Image (cartoon, rainbow, N blue to C red; front, side):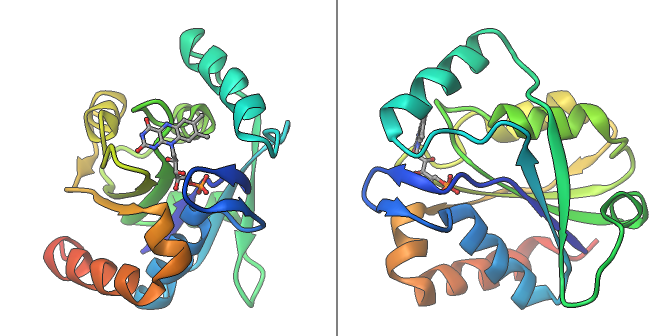
Length: 180
Ligand SMILES: Cc1cc2nc3c(=O)[nH]c(=O)nc-3n(C[C@H](O)[C@H](O)[C@H](O)COP(=O)(O)O)c2cc1C
């Protein structure tokens, strides 16, 4: 198992301004629960900290189906090659925030740039009320040759304020869906 995630630090509803995004925190919980290494999707151009400023850019990216440039950052105590880890992984837990009901565009760039055919994808997201919204359908459309398992939605505010509750949700989800 490998955990790949995108998350935006900054201002969001119900959490204020956070130094570490809610999806990043949830990714850490998934990684701790599975022993999996993590890969962070980092946009070359960081999103603004302010919600309104970020929203303008994000909406424009969605409207134009932009594919912002990204790099991948391997996060583990021992350094590893993110590209090799992705190629070798049978199962990828893929984490992202819900943006306007959709996958964030840096995640779409990641999907375009990697061959994930034949792999099992376990989607997890943070959101503030939409749940997974359209994102599992978007993943199934983008990755017709992958096995997209049922996703895990967790409120960002729960991850930030009640990590015990988030950990319990991750445990149930992994129990139900992580075996091949
Ligand atoms: C531009 C923008 C659009 C958003 N759209 C939605 C949405 O459609 N539905 C929802 O439940 N949450 C939405 N959110 C809230 C985020 O999904 C939520 O705050 C999430 O936990 C942020 O994760 P992060 O800290 O990892 O970036 C949106 C946030 C932003 C910045």
